[in-house]
Length: 264
Image (cartoon, rainbow, N blue to C red; front, side, top):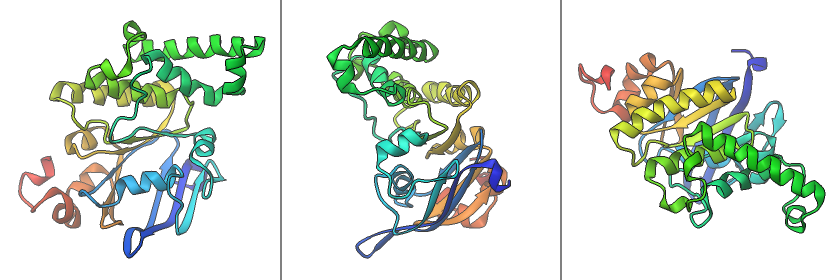
């Protein structure tokens, strides 16, 4: 992959909290339209990486560039506007708002107007509101949530809440989508549906995806390449087959090397 192929380039990113080195000299490239996994044991620094990419934390060192734009120092809302959206390990929907309003609020990021203008009800704002409502409903239809648009988000079944969170992230029109453990808490059937959904999102929205996930079956099935973290450092990078057979990965994450390890 050449630099022109990469939409996201992370180079030498580090972050410490007091004496704890949470992430050390982390580098990663995401090719346009790619689907990469980021795995590692609990506490390896995966979610910290997402927080560094999205502006929740500022790196102590290193660079983060999205489509050639330097993101270091930008606020999370500015990074979202630049084209990076995320979901969270712990679902963060607006529980008391309707399913439709959760997605419609995310549409405001691309509206070109302000929430204040929408509230004041100017003709321009009313036109924007109609367009955003239709866009939100389109996303709900794609995610099989159209018949639940008036329900409060907190009342949705868990799998539907996960789908709604992804729909809301896509409403911002991202070039890169970060998925933080989307299979967490899902039952086996929901995980099967999630695999199909991730592939569908990538194909239909032409979005580049970086996936954090502990479900190794899902990761190995949907990801083209995988980066492995341990104690905040990259210990391996490659195809699923290469990662599964890497002794350092087997030791750090997949457990002791066994004949079955390659089929986890």
